[in-house]
Amino acid sequence: MLSRVFMRVAHGLKNFRLRRDYVKIAGVRKWSIGMCSSSSPLQLGSAGLNHPVLTAQDVVDCRAAFVASPFMLRVAGRWHMLFEVFDLDTAKGQIGWATSEDAKVWTYRQIVLAEPFHLSYPSLFEWNHEFYMIPETTGAGMLRLYKAFEFPVRWSLVGILLRGYFASPSIVRHEGKWWLFAESDLEGKCDTLRLYWANELLGPWVEHPSSPIVKGNSHIARPAGRVVPYEGRLVRFTQDCFLGHGTAVRAFFIPEMTSTTYHELACSHEPLLHASGKGWSQSGMHHVDAHCMEDGQWLACVDGFRLVSATLTDEHA
Image (tube, rainbow, N blue to C red; front, top):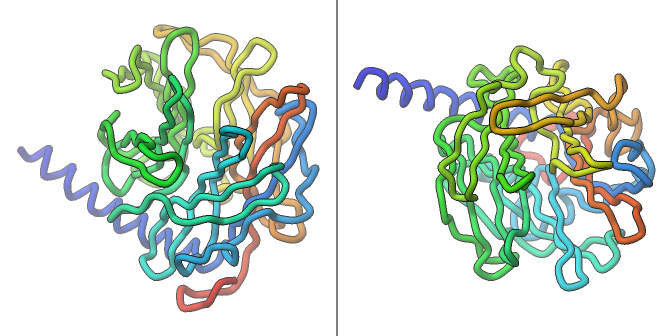
């Protein structure tokens, strides 16, 4: 009983700190979304990052502070993107939707998912011709699986995958199993990465014996987008949070991942994405959702931020 009471108190304190941090971030960090392309997901660099494709000003159905953490899919010839929209009036994130015919010009549509708690990082994927999303729901104290019953505008909760604090959940199907990476540090250091696996999407989910696979390292723990296959190996992207939330994106090869073993290698000593020093991404970047096209080129939606002086009473900045 005491342990349950302690967990509720700890969870309440965590929610208070999260809300405080969200308010602080909304006031000084203006996130926007951009696109880039390359012949490799490891060479995206700054190509195409001169201008953002979506900003807070594009949001028409709430008073948005920023847009961030985009995930996209191409469905029936049209690109669909889901992303966090931070609502200044509720001081929490909601999930927005935009579309594009060519992945260059994007049109904001609407908010497609809102909950009483903060939502972000809408990890979007297709499985067996159905569409699913695992957003970050740390304020709910659980990891929730949503299914689109009318893609992409109507989502319903279909399962609780894990209970506890799990940030930036990134799921991938690999060798007949589901794998889930999530940052899980209650102290807010962003330095602990846990790994889970399951035979079925709804579980049961089992923590890997090597988990946490990253501990005490805020440079490489927090996921930064979809895990993708490349040249026979998986690549996971990670946020560098050492100097603050989301300053750069790094990449790691995963040459071995079974239910009993795990091994990864840094793809480079240098970040894949980082502060550009100018414009909308001048202060940092922390997300990449990369897709391999039919011609072998890679296309990715990314985000970046610039530091500004603002408060929650400001209009769109």
